[in-house]
Image (tube, rainbow, N blue to C red; front, side, top):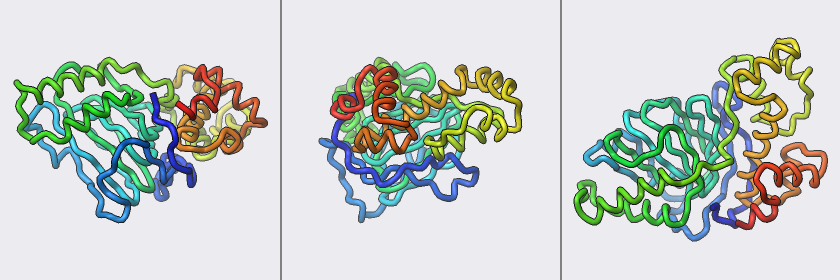
Length: 298
């Protein structure tokens, strides 16, 4: 489940919409209620990487804090990485997946998978690095909603000494924590698959930058330099869905993040280019099985 009542949204612009990533801006001033933050935005950042946490144990971790946001360029780890947001909304590109992480949602990135992350405004997050020897662990990329129990386990783990006792209570908590991550059902709000064709990527980038862009398939085919037939065929082959379905899933993914961060249904419908609130509510209900209002109150 998601935690309700996140703070107000300032703006939402996808940082992966431009090649240079010169202006990565996302939702700011979003917090997950009930989760204490140990640093205020005016304090220095807690900026750490995997190199700062060698694998002295199969699982290591840290609490990260960035008062002004950050961009982590494409990279890989020789260990799996699990992270979730406490504050701020991040955009993650992992392999061919584009993922939005509002507070209360996390991602498991397997070892060796190239990924990049961007977040603007105050950001707080918990991070684990997990060697391939540790078990259990998810099979492949996984996006999941963080339960209060899993959050409590991670918070407890982050209090451990670096050389925690693997055979004692601390080791049991680590195994329980990994079990909770592995058993958690995948989130339905991970975001649609990205195509590999650079021409189609250009179209997807434009839609991520402005999901309200209402151009029709013919216009987008022209944007990609393709005929309508080639555009629709290639888009389905590379993403596994039609262009119309892909755009709807993109909008629903962003709608979930915006609602979770405190915007009203009317604000979200307008931001995503729906002709009416009822049209937005109908598609949202069909996608998530909940009305936008009930989803926001979870």
